Image 1 (tube, rainbow, N blue to C red):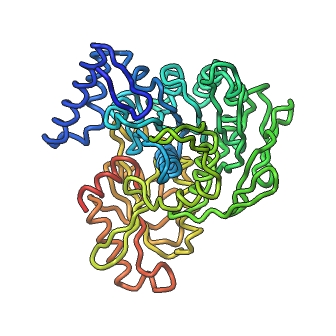
Image 2 (image 1 turned 90 degrees about the vertical axis):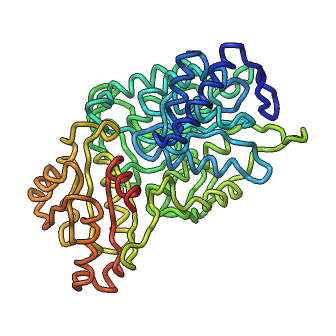
Image 3 (image 1 turned 135 degrees about the horizontal axis):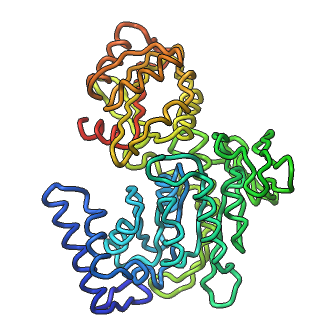
Length: 454
């Protein structure tokens, strides 16, 4: 069996052909029966039939891997937008967040004509994806604690990344299948891993969360953080590397001094950081051919940034809806670093009086351990109208009480939204303090619960 991937054509073994058929049937049944979105179950079944299916489907495609604790889904979506210009290649992507091998297989089977793939990768699977897909580009966003019952301690994870990256060949190595790593220079843990790679582009993308990077991975000394994202060990020469690009407010500054303003459809400094990483990664994709065979150059940075601006929501994140005639903005965060970044966004938006609904679950997709709540700076919500909901609303309420944040506890996200809207209607929030907007902030399944009920 062959898959017409545009150019070249991919020939599959009999076993791989059967596996591809299984993926398609299983995913279709999942959607028809309403058992899921058809982005995982087929991939799992296909890998049972042919454990080498991922490597087979990635062969002869230009692959970008995007990983990190926060921002993977958004950066993946931005990269797809950047690389999908009118003359760009077809892109296979799992940009809905199914970021383990089953989701990668399903995404590539669903896009058989794609000549490139942009894959979000769960942090613990980076080594396997590097080995099986031989990527052109690897994007390393950040590393911090997350899902303590499933993800390894940060230091263990960074050592695994370092070992995986050490096996890469550089982009200029003979054979034409080298890899460029695009890494966040402002995160010491990312830098420690990326230093093992032979070919790195360093981006000063910022890092709002330092608590998991205070100990030097090189010597055990203390990492000291300075102004503008600079950092260095107080004992050895481990320090932020010379950057190829960095953010200054809304400007992306290149090492040669040129500047590009980031006009984005997504809010917040952390999304400007995601955009900077996506833009630099896109410029590292190799030149290829158009369907007619004519050479196509790697797109220039201004064009890439213009395409990034078209992304205004990612799987519902940062989107707005209306309830009882009032706007509700949907925000997602899953760990202390992510919640801190969202609090920065709320401050940046200037809606200091807008009611906030916080929803926390602890299901498999969220991680079962909610001790991370004690690392979130909920004290920053003091003075707002806050409503706690979700499966673990009582745990959340205890944390809010210790943070001295006045709050109400409500069972159910819609009821919580309605209470927040009642507070607005009663005049708690005026036109100059949020214009009646309610901010809903939840972790994975809490966010999905609200979207489904809305």
